[in-house]
Length: 583
Image 1 (tube, rainbow, N blue to C red):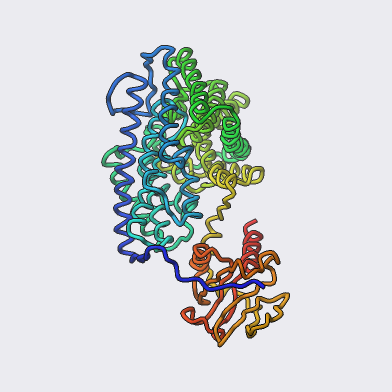
Image 2: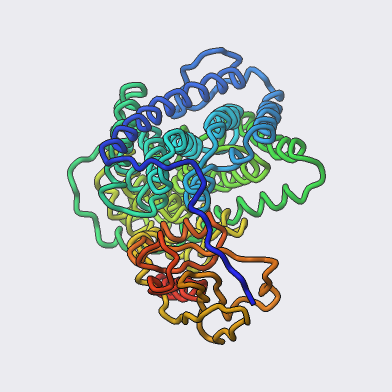
């Protein structure tokens, strides 16, 4: 017979519930650090880029302008390799979580670690990503600042011993602050947190996230300027214009193309990771070999064109596309493919940095190439090449990450162009649908699935938060007296064995026979019908049990107060219903 016993209350440090006002004040601090952190991170990237590419010790660096000088000659090939040595040492020695693009680690911390992120991650991620980008790695700066802001929010929560749900809110606030400050896109930051990070959306979570985002944006604008990320006069249109219906319809096939491109982008990164992991050697040789190839590509591009084009975050090339300085569809397609290759090599071999910027680069070049090709085939067709580039940027971000609304809102904020909204939505929705149909996992969730960690959709997580124990508990149990002789348990019901009116043992008929031994007792927790499902699951997880006894008075173990049980059966049925609901 399976003998079970109740567990003591959680022995972790006493958690201190914070008021909404306190959470807002904490969010203000997190937002300030996010804004200042984004500024300091850019300065660090600038310093390293100037040292490694120009042999100059200065902080000023405009990523929207091409690096048109190469004092190293062929030696430039070794610059990314030198960066790879430093990145590998930092990641291997101090924080393995800093490897890759960062956001999956934040999502994993939210769903599997109660919003706990080690403080050292913020420091290591800052330096490793700055070195990777500054030495020419094809990654973005948004992923690192998201992880940095999230780590700080988590650290604040850990220092104050606040509950997991409030700590998760600060993690999301830090991530949103990083996005907002990096792109000067406050609405994009808020929507990013809603779409990808928050497990519950209400006033208690939105207020801190919004405050952190506004604060970070203010500090970012004060330190970095108030201009949009892509500051071009041609993009600044504040009046809506009615576009040709034929032009709008042309974004449908373009959306299909971007969906296929996003699948290649998502799958390619993990194909590259698997390929490098299978190589002989160690972390140093793998990352250095990948970055050696990146260095060769950078040297070849500079030797032939006088510009690196695919180096770093790639904003300078995106600016060329948006300013219509690149008009050869073949060369644009070539740049698109080359950026994919360098991104796969950088992240796949062990680099540290984000995927937003490479995705925007691919979307811009592929979009402009598509628009120019259509214009060449059908000269009279009302094509706006820049509009296709912008729609491609949003579609690549939205389809690859699953954050469609974030991409749409953010592109509008980054360009000040209100006329791109409808093309962006059309392209992004179709692209995401194609990616979802062929490859259900996004670039973030695929990494977690490969670890065996399943992340619920945002709405599903909110439903969990809205449920309480009474919604799921079963009344399919029986109470019998536990005397000296073992009673015969039911084959279909959970049997609660009582002695002197107190719960002594439980028998679950679905527990394997091999586990039914008094030598391996299993505990249970006691909860109320009104307790939230999320808090109950967390209590069960911390206790390491799979059964909860639902009672009107958890402080007492009286069998008379038992009103139900919560077992793996009920949880499995609930998850099955949700799976059917969200298919």
